[in-house]
Image 1 (cartoon, helix red, strand yellow):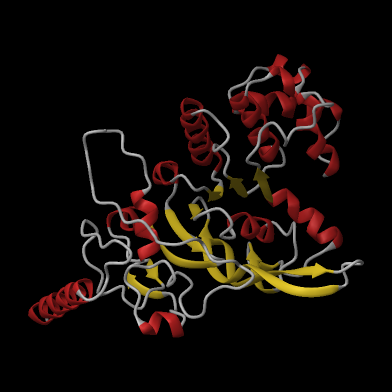
Image 2 (image 1 turned 45 degrees about the vertical axis):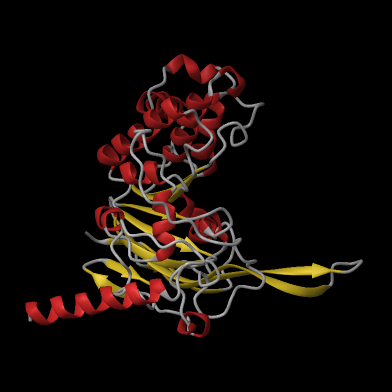
Length: 359
C-alpha cells in the first residue's frame, strides 16, 4: 500500500488568556503534543481514547481547519503544514469530513439537494444539469431516493441525516474522509447500518478513513489499524487484531475492559484506572498515564517513554511493556506493591527464560 497521509511530530497548543482584555497568557493547553502516524490508501486508521485526549483536534489539524503549532503533515506526498489561500482551497476536494452530530451539521434552511450541490458550486464542478445529476447519484450511493433532494433536514431521521452528511463529504470525490465519531449520536441499530455503509463505500470508491471514536466495539468492526491517544499523545498503535488480542499499554487495557459484553453471565476481570484524567494544561512529568497506572515505577514518573516496536506494526510507549502480565491477569490500582511487584518480576523472568530457550 502507498502512504496517503503522513503526520510527524504534530503539535497543537492553545494559549489560555486572562484579564479584562484577555491579553495575558496564563497557561497553555497541550491538546496535541508530538504525535506521528501514517495512513495508507484504502485503509481505516482509528483514533481512540477518552474525551479530551486530542482526537478531534488531530482531525482538524490533518484537514488544516486549524493551524499546527509545529510538526509536519504530508498529504499525497505534499507538505501541507503551512499551506494556505487558493492552494489550500483546492486541496479541500481531496479531503473531507463527516461530523458527529447529524442534526447540527446540516443547514436547516437548505434543501438536501442544495446542501449536496453547494460543494460542487464552491469548487466549480460541472454545470447546473451535471450538478443535479450528481446530487441524484450521491443520494442513490448512500441509500436515499432522488425525491429526497427536495426535502429539508428536519424531515429526516438521525440516520438519514448522517447519510446526507456522508453524501456531502463524497460530493467532490475525496481520497481521505475524516469520520469524527460519525455514529455516536445514533441509535445502536442505526449505528450498524451507517458503519456498514461506510465500509461498503470504502470498498467501492477506494476511500481512506481517519476514524475517530471512543466505542471500541465499533472500532473493532471498522478499523484496519488503531492508534490509542492519552492526553495529547499516542501511547499505542497496532493492527486491529494485534491490539485487541494483546494490548501492551496499561491504558489500552483499561479501554478494553470498558467494552460492553453481550453475555450478562460472562464475567471477566476488569482493570480500572485510579484517579481522574490530569489537566492538559499541566500534564504529569514522565509517562502521562503514571498517575493512574497500576504498574507504575519510579522510572515512569521521571522519564517519558518512547513509542517502541513490540512486534510487526505494533508500537507501544510503556517502560514495562515486556513485564506486564497476560491480559487476563488484572492488578487493581492501589495493590501494586509489594505483591504485584513480585508477580511482575516473575512474569519478566519467565519471559526471559522462554526467550533464552527459544534462542
